[in-house]
Image (cartoon, rainbow, N blue to C red; front, top):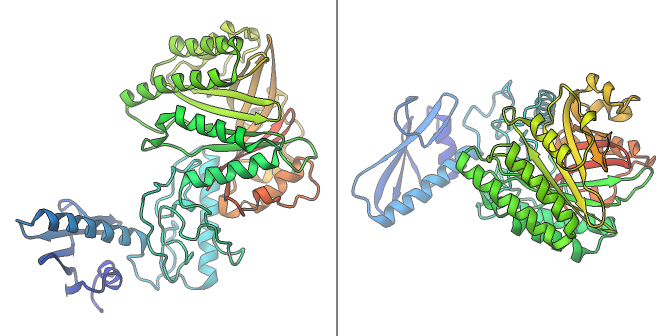
Length: 485
């Protein structure tokens, strides 16, 4: 098809019933009505698909029946999905300097180059503290720290017959779920086509390793999900799991998962989420906490209402070990939300050590952890450059083998319990992409005291694909944070 625009040539291959009627026009017939997809000038009306200098639009006659309109709508969505999934450029050109997708990559060298670009781009984003995604990459490679849950009802695109991953096609969920990668040099597939099944698989594997009854873990997971009704909103985030490895241990001694507040910009929606999450916290507290802890929770929530805007983001977590459950709440004050004022109000009302608060810092997280029969633990998270951590006394010896994955900044956690305060741990985002995290996982396990540093079954990807997000070193051991995909 010489002379035909590459995007239309690609569509012609995907939809054999279409007919090329010119170098810039493709025609198809839907319920007797002719529809044309054509290359349009930039900015010329509504685009069906646009990328770079390529803009496609469509036209058809008026007076279509309702059934034809619905059929047309489905076909156009399918066409747009195919365009998004494929290449629209010269298949023989080298990879774009900015990364991006090509369908027919020439041999292993290009695949390796693209993978290297993904890893470099990810590290750059983490070092700069960005959580945006990388245009042109499928979900399993994007750069967001916490990618959105793929919609379970989204149809999968058929996998391409060639390309960097012959099992993907840039679909929203991986069509090779539950398969092993045939070659370690290939892209690692996601194990589950939707977030919920990945979370349940992780819950089962992690509860088993931490010797927590599955019935208890499932109850906490179910109640958290039902109480936080906003997990179904657009912008909802998957649960972030974490496990703690005591010094020298190969198995975790606890399981934790957090429901982060959805990334929604609308103030009215955020106000409703704030109200709903405060109610959800009380629902969870009624199940696991005594009146003493519930009173502390009410005091903490009162500080949130009085000292912070009603659009404040709230995240809720559950931590389980053999002794029972612990409820954790985190407030996410923004730059203009008076975080230092909120921290002082919480510490003052709940008996923390107010005089020990850093005088010039504002926390990025204000949290509380509550367990039945124990005092509340107030946790303040301060963002610090790695070289500016010394006033906290944390990690004077450095990060050891994990230094290679250190992005140059992290969070120093100041904990208040029974009127005493101390810096207890250093958290840092993992500057290793999911596709290239094996070296990080081995270094993390050696740092936690496991000299063998072999990957255990629960982290192997057999049951779910762990996407490391943060690591933590401090009192009690090392903690790994990750998403289950």
